[in-house]
Length: 247
Ligand code: APR
Image (cartoon, rainbow, N blue to C red; front, top):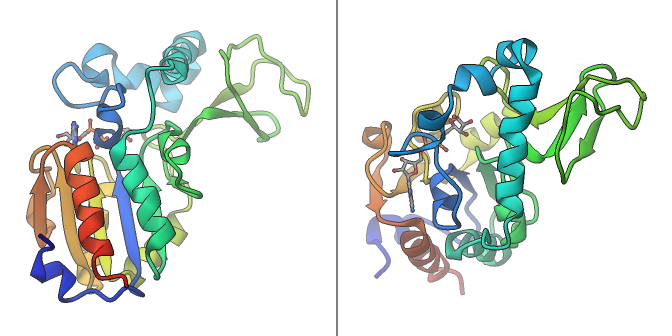
């Protein structure tokens, strides 16, 4: 049943900001970072997710992201019911819906979302350190690749935001957080800033804040309400609750 605290206060024209993390893609077969056996227990983030790591050993960094790109290309890895439910919300909600994802996979797009904002970049994109051109990338990247734009070699890197770098489109995100009526966080541990601070910003600007996660995140105390469970169960149910107020 829809939660009165939520559906009594929302109007179908209200604006919604949704933040997703690795947990929403877990049931599609992609690893999270900090759960047991997660990515950061398999490899040191300093080596593969920092500019210093890339400068030290670009081959290691390319191998790390090449492996993740191959994993994403596995036919068994498909968008799940949570991705599809968010796409349905975007289609049927009358107000603005901004989907901000920390994920670098393309499962939101393949699940039907039209314009997810990838604040940490995208696994299937690369850019040239020499000319800054961004290109699509499907297969492997290596230090031997030449940039298709400037032709120079050795400058291609994954278009992924590493620790110590500024996430993408932060001004747009900040404006949306100040203006939204509902902030929903899905499948993120609330460990990494600035994303972990979004709930407090939205709440202080007057939004109602909800966390949908397998378990309480590090930021759980900031949320008005929390719904715990696997994303493929709690997200579709939550979206149907919201859509129950749309005529
Ligand atoms: N359904 C819902 N939530 C889940 C599920 C599931 N099936 N499985 C795991 N989770 C939750 C975990 O409980 C955890 O709180 O997803 C969260 C994943 O947390 P992290 O592994 O820390 O991933 P995330 O929050 O996305 O990390 C943020 O850190 O390393 C950087 O750039 C990286 O974007 C990433 C950022």
